[in-house]
Amino acid sequence: MSSRPRAAWPLVAVFTAGYLAAYLLPTLVGRLSAHLGLDSTEAGLVGSALLLSSASAGFTLAGRVERFGPGRAARAGLLLATVGYGCAALTTSVPLVIAGAVVGGFGSGTATAVAASGIAAQHDPHRASSLGLLSVSATAGALYLTVPHLGGGHRLPFAALALVALLVQPAASRLGVPAPAESSGPVAGRLPHRRSGLVLAGGMLVWSMAQNALWGVSSRIGVSQVGLTEVTVGAVFAVALGAGLLGVMGAGALGARLGRAFPIGAGTTVIAASIVLSSSARGLGSFATGEILWNTVYPVVLSYLIGLAASLDVRGRWAVLAGSASSVGVACGPVLGSVLSEGAGFPAMGVVLGVATLLVAVPVTAVALHTGGRPLVPGSVRRRGGAPAALLAATTGGLPGAVPKLGSPEQAVAEIAVPALRRRRPLRSAFRTAGPDGGAGQSNAYASTSAR
Image 1 (tube, rainbow, N blue to C red):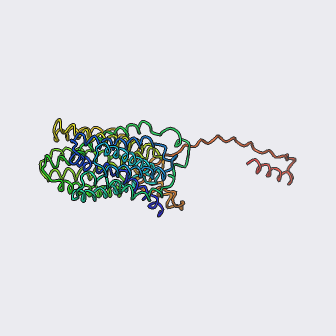
Image 2 (cartoon, rainbow, N blue to C red):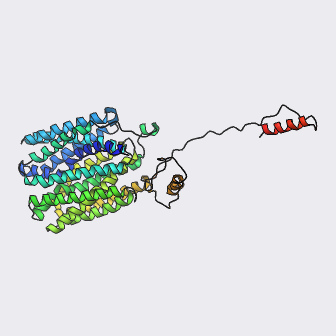
Image 3 (cartoon, helix red, strand yellow):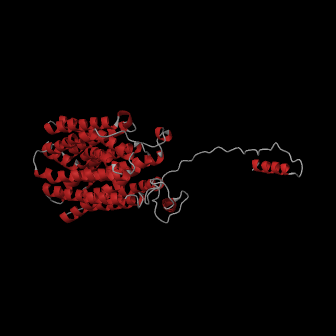
């Protein structure tokens, strides 16, 4: 029991370094536009280039992390992130800033792919993903509290990304080889649950695009439409990310008790309403309410989506592919948000994004219902035993650790073909009944015993 947290914390650290760039996207885009002479669309394109590079790293490494070794791949990705973001922070040349952002984005994507593969191999992927989101939310919240009070233009956010990647390097060296499934047959071959995995990956692409279309222009909504200062907007983002910490902690405590379908479906509905509220805000109260409610529920739903993708393949291939598809959506989000906001205004943009979020919730929730299984709760009786069978085994002297805990998701049962056994022919005694004497009686008894 005590070894699991030690095995999980390096993954959490690498996950934090890989995901942090997406969380800092608003301040990156805003400072590129304010201090490098770029307009909002051009700054959004730089952010999109960073995240597309991150997604390309995920697509490249899907299923290949074990071949290169998780520790080696994580160290290489963090080194690229340190060098790329560091170079972008040290220059004011727009081409060099874009090049550094692309290199750093590829490093972030590499770190994220390694973390996703390791999370899928954990005994509880949802708990590991919740810890990762908890860590990255706390780190981003601390940066949003400090960065607006400091100068430095675009240099400070890029320097923060480079510094986090550098500090996580020692944790990457502690990553071991993930322990996949016990059987190597179907795991080592083609991807399992291909249809469900493709639907989930496509749904996460659209879902993430809608979320980050708003996230990429949230700073502009607060400054331009609501009339807030950058410091006030940063404080709202910090409080919102702090509320996200509480949401992730609640999701980790809830676990699989409600399954995955209900948190994903209900949470996405709340997110859609929050998007509409935040984008149509005219005052601090409505803007802060929309941002805080949205950031509270967003990481909760994301943790269940990551756990669902990890459950489709224990080697983490669907986790990496779905995460990379999500990164593509994250990359396209700022451009989509800028185009919609400039063409139709912030309120109309919010309505479009809210409707798209509601529509994509249907197939993603269907995948959770189809492949996520139902939680094991007391009183449920199913063909595979369920909780009553677990309670019976636990109270009759079963081996410790062989009984699933109540509330754990249903596991697949492997069918084992048992060849038909040939019936044994009865043995025939070599003795014959000779007469009614005692010897003949003993011979009949022996013959009866041998033929039983």
